[in-house]
Length: 247
Image 1 (cartoon, one colour):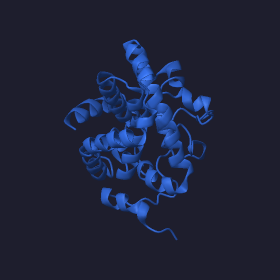
Image 2 (cartoon, rainbow, N blue to C red):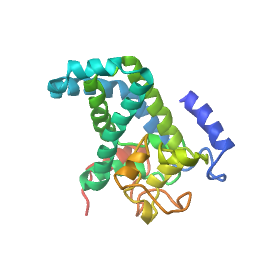
Image 3 (spheres, rainbow, N blue to C red):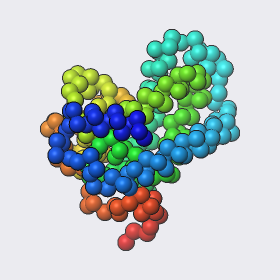
């Protein structure tokens, strides 16, 4: 928390997207609670994933494939692990948007009306458990080394925080290859053109390939949050919301 605070608050102040947005913006306390809870259960998530893969996908493990992965150059392995993870992430993420029951959980993440480095921590616990288990499954099955997995975990953590941050950084043509703050801010926008778009977490080209990228819009969206602004404020209320009956 201290490291993220020092790094990303400084970045947000140096190159802000919305210059008038406060560091302690509205609803920051709830997102800070999300941050603590989400990181405390990471160890539990990895334990669940380990059992999930071992008992559910042991049949899919191939020593031949794992041996091939182990012999692949380090940089290629790193690209492959991020690509494999993002392909799974893309389809799981898309399901959260297109299946109404799943959206009730994912809507918690989209309810932030102001974007900054802490906003990405706003997630439902069950979504974290399911998504991380599914994303880590192919990584474990394919047999990537512990060093590669550890580096991937660091990269995904930093990129997730950075892409939610209140920063305005130009990436030129790279925005068509990798996910940037601008690209992901559009995913969180409540603008009509942004609904159910820009699903990728790492490689933006996946959205262009699958036809879900936001195109032809201004550089930045006008507003964020869920359409209708129906999500309650506060971590506990947001964790309970998906289980409430709808009228």
